[in-house]
Image 1 (spheres, rainbow, N blue to C red):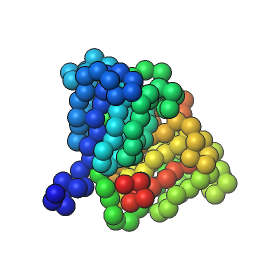
Image 2 (spheres, one colour):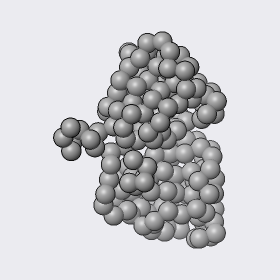
Image 3 (spheres, one colour):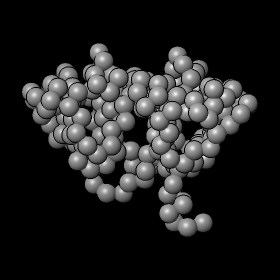
Image 4 (cartoon, rainbow, N blue to C red):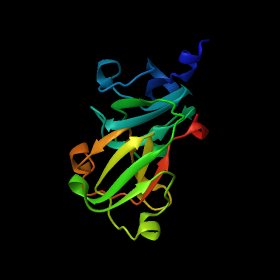
Length: 183
């Protein structure tokens, strides 16, 4: 196996719980799984890490998957609907850097992160995080302190308004780097 194929992820999605029914193998992003499966209720991550979404086009509730078996994603993840899209998270071995902002469009108080933050209120006295700029690395942002609650995957780029990403009424209180320990 070449080193490039080892860095690629691979997940197999199944229509029914307990890895039953039709299946679809995926090793890259998939914006709409309905062209492959009518529904998706379980999956096996064979390699890598993935973010799965309960709406098409990487919208709605998100859940982080690492290598393992997920026989009934609804009870394990608390999602109300089946998986509709997925995004592969590439392995990253560089530095991590992200600026978080109190308000939309990079407004208000700003702080720069280079490592995990379990509570923005305790560390920065910042009660809201409404936009961010990810300069380096891949991050998970959590709705509650201590990496709990709903989450959102952030890859390098500017995120001016989380509401436009299907995350209305959500504020982020903790952030974690997706590093080698997940692979």
